[in-house]
Image (cartoon, rainbow, N blue to C red; front, side):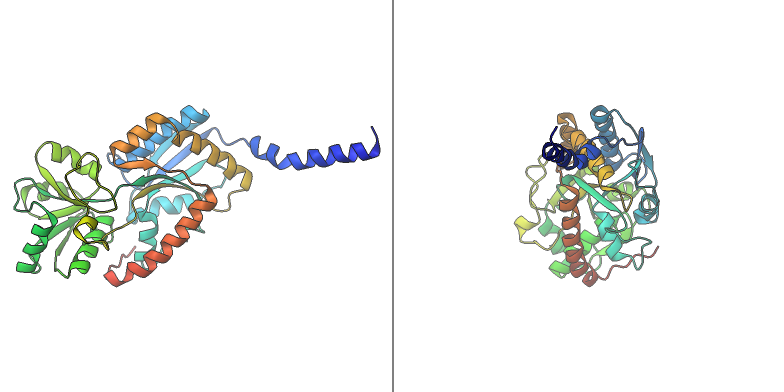
Length: 322
């Protein structure tokens, strides 16, 4: 082989090395999926559905671990401290960024303290519900009653600074009404269905069994589209309330400083799992549509979202303490 030809062959081989390195990256046999809420809810179910699809797509064992508490920061902190070898991912919601804005101090940077991997699904929003035999049939009924008796119409939430609290506060601020906040640690549904509290924003998947059994009824949806299972329930935007919105999505983060070959291999397997047709059907049942991003696209999305949240959330006057 001539010296020139040998030089060309070596250059071609060198050019292929990064591709071969990425393709040959071997991830640990098992992957822990850390979920910041307890079992028995839509987020937990979605993580388990994803875990099954991921195992089918990659052959890796996927283990869901629930780490609830401290407004999702216990789970997030564990992931932020973990090795960036593909053995751990954080399966969470848009509350990851809202919590970071609302809390006085969190033990990590919500973006740079992790490796953003991808958005997994785009959520449809939050559903405003009330008891089935109550006096409200639409959002205007709620607002009229609140204007007539300021501070008397109550709304339940899952705690200070959680999505139901934030969205209801946005509603009150954008319409100029005074609503009574009743935060719960658990069992908010019993009081809502019995009339102890008047209304509540919640994920549509949580509300649907109680709507179908005739115990709750939907009044309005946040976001820009109606929930397919409740086609007659309008969005708040359709009623002219466009400022009542909070990002609602499922997302996957990895520990910080993940090497590029590891991230590429992890992202490739996750994308294969998310493109499973059966997973798409499962996600749709809880009001989510599969959405895949590259790590760079997802990080850019989060950076833009944080800027918006830092502008829109502080005026609400909500503060969360660890």
